[in-house]
Image (cartoon, rainbow, N blue to C red; front, side, top):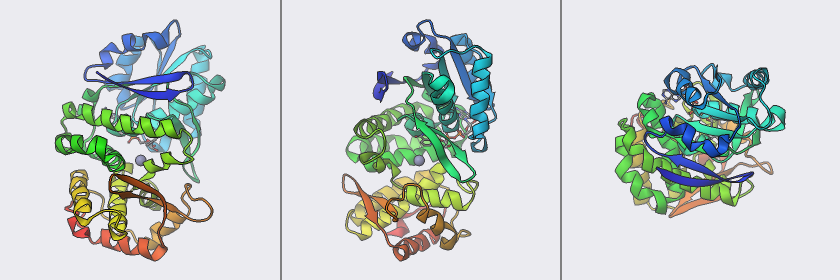
Length: 366
Ligand SMILES: NC(=O)c1ccc[n+]([C@@H]2O[C@H](COP(=O)([O-])OP(=O)(O)OC[C@H]3O[C@@H](n4cnc5c(N)ncnc54)[C@H](O)[C@@H]3O)[C@@H](O)[C@H]2O)c1
Ligand SMILES: [Zn+2]
């Protein structure tokens, strides 16, 4: 088992990562439980696989939300709150969220607002959840106006991930999670690049036994960044690497065209080209990253999606400040924040992405 520490309101939240941890969950959470009642929230896919078993071990009632991003809405939060109250939950009760980023985002937000705040624990079951969504205390839901527009910073008091659950995750979801892994490695290459090169191919091929080191490496990177800037006023913006174009692609296709990680993979290729053109990265380094992004393919093709459809959403991105969009670009050994990229320059890079084969290789970009 590897433990990585995250900050939370009560001090430090341990993130425990290890194969075979789920059957041990009651022991792992003994301190957090300490006489409290537990309540498990999961979704209809994860419930039968893991959620019900965890609820059994914690002697907790179990609520299964319908699976899918379209349920990351107010009505799910209301449903959780009413279910908790129907089961006589109190402010000391412990909510345990078992699932991907959709479940941990909704349940974490429900924990933040029910009875003005319940403690909660995250048990991420997707790779994206293990390396990103369940970490760092951002919780929230979507509105018609856009994704993640309502939420709270409300950190879990413990996180437990068992990479063995990745064996049942759809291969496409697994590859999408790897996009956030590659992103973390681009942000902090000195800690992650070597693990990436030995583990990326086997994890992409579906071997969950290779995921533990990658998850722990990404968690350490995120822990360090979130520790510097919990509320995303400065250094945490580094985590948006690749996300400026990604959010545009997702919004332009009404969140149905790409898995988040697939959009991030295209976004990472775009920032690599922008960085190489500015001399922030050598062509050789940009090529090495593009070669790693090949493991995330096949990606949904960009050929049918015009720049004129994507650009308005980039301009409206919620990270926009003072009227312009600041891009995060990679450089040797890390990233540069808040770089101005003109509309024509972004359009030209997009046209180059469109000409790449969606199943890779992507090296023709440089
Ligand atoms: N809070 C944050 O900091 C943060 C960061 C990144 C992403 N997110 C959010 O995370 C969400 C995406 O999360 P996701 O990619 O985990 O998607 P998801 O939660 O929708 O899970 C993907 C699918 O896999 C299923 N599933 C989950 N675990 C499984 C398992 N072990 N075996 C079989 N099936 C399983 C789910 O039921 C779902 O159908 C988005 O809403 C995004 O906004 C939040
Ligand atoms: Zn992301």
